Image (cartoon, rainbow, N blue to C red; front, top):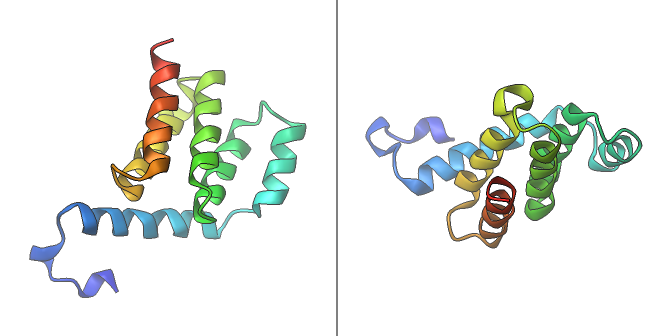
Length: 117
């Protein structure tokens, strides 16, 4: 559907947010369910890839704050993991959610407290 939008109109926060949200939903489509991922992460807290997948799956279910918390947890364990992948994905979430979304505001506070503590 986004492909039908004229090239000249493919700009602005609304378009970017929608396009990124669709990309994030496509990423989540290939993942295990959140219950299975959460159980795996609980049993294997050091499995950062599973935690990353859990964040993407939680986001797809609309559990935005929980998704942000999982990415911040990755950064607490290993800031440079996957070439700073958790921070980059968190920024993608913020852009998809919009600057004024409560989950963005909460996620930014979590990120700031981690970076400046």
